[in-house]
Image (cartoon, rainbow, N blue to C red; front, side, top):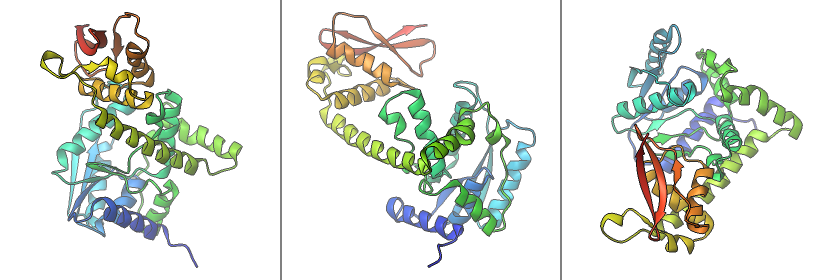
Length: 323
């Protein structure tokens, strides 16, 4: 029996995703850049439900406004009920890739009008994300990759190869936009895509991208279980000004993975951001290896202040200090 074409495979993946995560929904939005992944996804989405295309113009390249306008026209030709171009200003915090991503997600969140947003991330994107997490050494959670459904963000193509989206565009007679940044070796993800993964595929005999994707699924399932256990544990202080503190004795009694998950959730709730496994384990040592040491600085989104985890009177507390 012949294998289904690329368009049919994408439509089947999207229909399966919708049935699992978005049953009963009547419309959705899709993030459209004009590239093959998002263009193929837009074509599939518009054939299933009323679809609004959201086109973010980062303004980082000459002619970006025209690229966005072309994407808008293409979305309407594909049957989208609406297509909107959203210009954004990209900052510098975290480097160009992170800054563009931050601006893009903020714009999509503001423009979605309550609808779930379909994103064109593929299995290959997932494999790259796992490798990035591995290289950063931030623990299993950073290698768990992207969630298929992380409301309002929806990634129905995480089991579809990038080549299939290009093939789908060919089948549909669509000419996708090619982002020159995808060939720019200054970006880490580009080098992973063009150098590291092909080398791994060659050395290990193929199947690396699929194996990395399966690894992400396994690690994510483990992380979600540990998160559930951490939510049930809740070893906080009980009253007054210490209500947001953590009881060190109660933390000591928890298994290590659950204890670290509790600490991570506590730090995030208190303003921590960009947390690494090293930072979380350093805070954990205030519990498991307490010898009167000072506070532990952790990453945060605070402006003009630094965030520290400190221990005193048997409790972990968060302290803010001016920079």
